[in-house]
Length: 391
Image 1 (cartoon, rainbow, N blue to C red):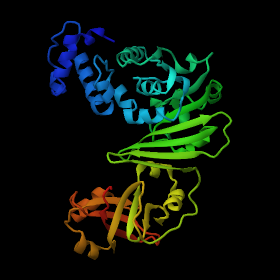
Image 2 (image 1 turned 135 degrees about the horizontal axis):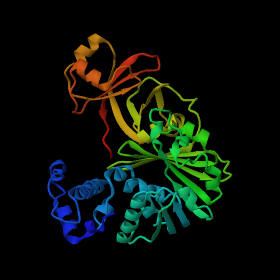
Image 3 (image 1 turned 90 degrees about the vertical axis):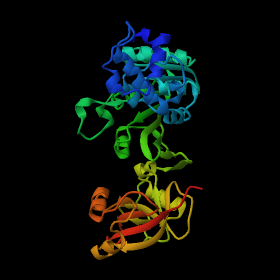
Image 4 (image 1 turned 90 degrees about the horizontal axis):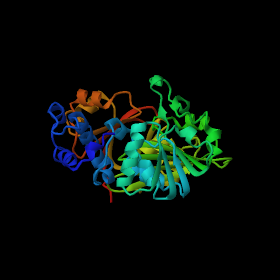
């Protein structure tokens, strides 16, 4: 950490050059003897990443930014704030502290937060930023597992990262560092609640096979993109796993929760008057039977994760009114969809969106929504729809 970067004239230069082309700026000579242009560009990149993802940091003076990969890997303020509200108490240890975003939000609900980070530079950066943010957080530069050897906390939070040598293999928690599966008993013996963040790539059933005492699974999406899976563990928990999904959108927050179970008794139907596409968090959960039961909607087919009803309802996802249904036949397609403007979605369909657009000369946009899918009779169909606007 080069503290000369925090000098007023350097900080002013960074702010004034936020809109410059960085690929050109990096080749210019630094106007400062103690700070290289490469270091300045790193600060600009970090600040630009923070502008939309971490506005508290962006709007705070003298924040020091690590390499952009550390900003990319950290939680956004939206997801960090959400997870901080899942747990409360006096003491919390963040064993994989990183840039410190999660630790900062946990500190709003805990009296004593310990930020543990094995990378010395990142630990120093986080500690400096906590002081700028007026956050009372203790920073420790140590291996997270070792750091808590003789301590006990109300909550331990850990965000294991996938080992680089496991690329291309099936993603398991035991493929990550720190190895939560190997150290699970050790961790649970040192806290009341263990909160684990994993990549959205992790299969939920695989996670449940590796973890004991899971009380809750939280699937967190932002603008219909799953960002995090959160596993809340309580030692000796024997109650059913509670699955909670949340999708933060510009217009509203979509929530759904149910007990984890197999979706094996779902009612199916031909497409009716209205069509529903669950948000990404629900898609990830696989809790389609619970969705069908809770909202009184029917699934179009076993592998077609779309729902339908005769009357419009509120629903955690996109809602459409079906205008007409066409069989996927060449003559029908030439007459009805060739060269039109429409928004295309495929669900349980053998051709990709790009292939369909290319073949039928369809351009993106407009008010038409076409769902290319397969019904419960295994027939390929096209659903012509109009989107129901958010009220």
